[in-house]
Length: 121
Figure 1 (cartoon, rainbow, N blue to C red):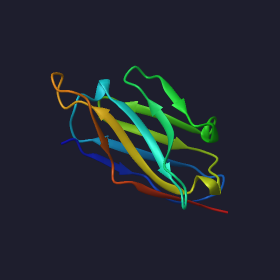
Figure 2: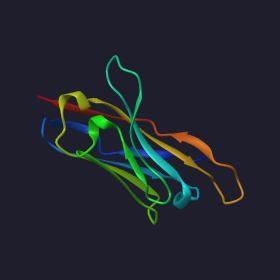
Figure 3: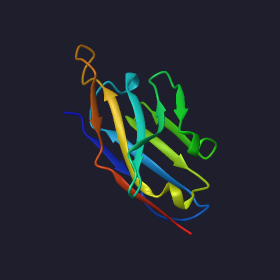
């Protein structure tokens, strides 16, 4: 079972920055699709950013130009750099991975436990 461990959430003032990290406990990380989702108060979960094994990225319109997703395959870790934070970015941010445990196993979906990001005005 692949475990995803998130860190980096917290409380920040509007206009500030935070960096989230998501470390995978095992798996063929280099081919994994990694993503960050968020769920704000009273809202549905939404995709924030995604990065493929080849490094292709896509972002939600609401965060384009402010957030950057990246990965370090040597550390089996994905990152979400969040700049110019707004109060509407307040949410629980969850890491997602579509990853296979070994090269002969199928891809499966995994989720982290979630980390709270609160942006104050």
